[in-house]
Length: 115
Image (tube, rainbow, N blue to C red; front, side, top):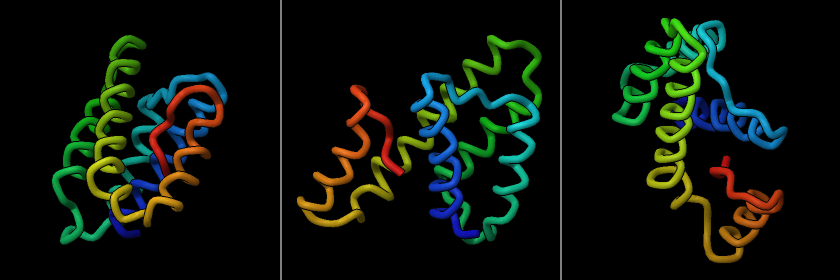
């Protein structure tokens, strides 16, 4: 799995949970699954964004309360959105392609980071 594939995978989870009106709660069990997927990314592709997410997910795997889970889940979602905004989205194509992607992700009345 490439780093970009990992981010698409995790952003998909976050986006689908948000579309249902739920928070993308990254419980300890979910965090363990995410960590197993991070381990599939070759070490040479583990840049700053992936390292940040991995650190936050490790903390989520040890969360002791629902407040900790919600707080860390929010931080993970922000870190993933940052990778999309600064690394992945700019490569998504020209103005027409960007407009189409924006429409797909604004269609439910609020913005969801693009996957």
